[in-house]
Amino acid sequence: MQPDAETIRRAEHALDLGPHAGLRGGELVGAGTVPELMRNPRSTTGRFLREPLLHPARPQRVVNAATPLLTLQRVALHNITGSDVRIPLGRLVAVTGVSGSGKSTLARDVLYESFVEKAAVGCKAIQGREAVGRVLEVDQTPIGKTPRSCPATYVGFWDAIRRLFADTSEARMRGWSASRFSFNTRGGRCEGCEGQGIKKIEMSFLPDVRVTCEACSGARFNPETLSVSLRGKSVGEVLAMSVDEAVEFFAAHPSIHRCLRLLQDVGLGYLTLGQQSPTLSGGEAQRIKLVYELSKSNAVATLYVLDEPTVGLHMADVEKLIRVLHRLVDAGNTVVVIEHNLDIIAEADWIIDLGPVESFSGTPW
Image (cartoon, rainbow, N blue to C red; front, side):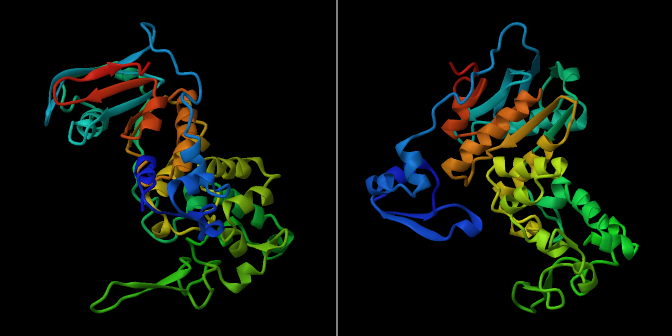
């Protein structure tokens, strides 16, 4: 299993699954040599092999003497010895280099930790930090600690959906508030699974097994709550909707619709609104976190640190990720991304390249 274009090109036989992700996937779209795959009109992989991404996707942002800088003075940690590093703010910055060259040391152990500790870590001093309002590492850890966590709750639009259900005539007649439609509190949720939709069965000498709750059949709510409908859909059915379906269903509700469109934009239209956190891949969790950031009207200039976000991503997903990173920068933020992926590097406004002899820092053109 390999989404890397160069590896695929060298394959003697390729099996391509699709045509899309999630419920719209699972079909063997193509099987054969790489040239045959490239001629297959149904193969997304073949299309990207045939027509690689053109760079830059948008005009690269100029870095000049007027550009505000964040300067790490005398970085000396692990294998980085006494280098000064300049990071232009309000730009897409790529940290590149061979494996083990010090990329994570620079971006995470020095840059990120210095902001977390509010003191220079692994360097002598940091100049220009007052221009950064907050710093955030967007990693691939799960979006929640329990199966109750899902895209709708993490991004934040589930509260608005709960209010819509509470505003129906059926809910008002029964005196139910929005809390009735929360699967995190007692009252409306299924108590058999405590709103998780699944139950965990502990096995003595084997890994725990998770099964669908028999009481609610995975709907998370009790029968009384499920009897209330919003335009013919119960709260359980709304949770089971894919993002693509929900975009149409909530088209008349701007705040909800905007978040759903953002999820579509990052290539997660196939996920369900109630997709349980443990079932999400690291890449999916990371993109949901980016959507959360894009959904906020945050006036604070933020420095985002991402460590190889393209790991495991298909070429089509990399294209979507590039657009998201540009949107974050266009909103006045700075994105520092550790990467080997050449498509991401080609989109950078500034590159910091680490190596065994000397480092490069500058514009890619």
